[in-house]
Image (cartoon, rainbow, N blue to C red; front, side):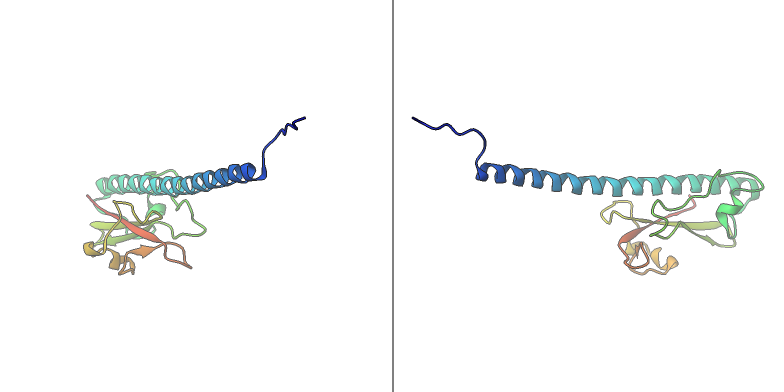
Length: 154
């Protein structure tokens, strides 16, 4: 009489678990990269809104704010409704603003997490030194893992 075995062998189970582990690892990596890109898109959107508010302020006053730019853009005339902070505000520096040429120009800087982003500011532009980083690296206080993204008045 022949015995019939039902179920899987140990090797088959190990192969199936190994395949699932590899797929899970790939999915987790892609999910993390998607979160990084989403935060960078949020930063660029915030910078665009701030840039538009700064231009509206300049149209009304003929100059850009001298300091405390987000506070100035909120009162007495409301150009922005809320204060913009970095999506990782507890770990990353917030958006930085530097007025230039007696408040007739400005630089607005943020850090991007994705170092491969094509819109990052490069060392060749010479703008990074304005924010104290000759190598265009920025990010958390403990480790400079991001790259600078700088916009200026159009």
